[in-house]
Length: 112
Image (cartoon, rainbow, N blue to C red; front, side, top):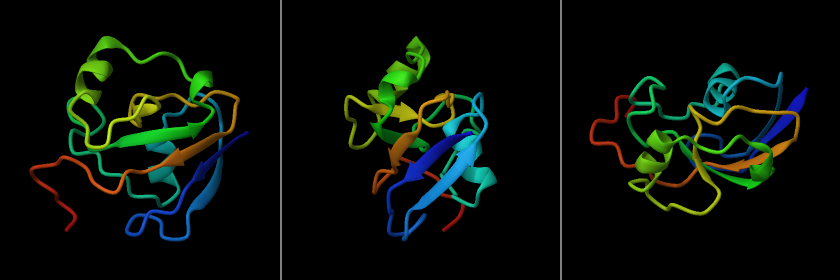
């Protein structure tokens, strides 16, 4: 099992969270399955940036992003070199430390 350590986010997971998942699941699916409500306005189809995360540790263990993801990441708020769309980043066998950015670019937020 791989540990995903989510750093505190004042709205989504104020205390942070540590979850264990099987390799092969996306960061987004793992988070959602464990009650961490990452936005995913495009229903995880790699068509928006609402599920943007920053992988603070373990980034190099992830497969390289495909061109469609890289193009979208250019539009993400707070883009950093370790940014990924959580719907596209597949967990491997290395533990990850993940930061959910304070803001997302979403013209239609459905949960607020």
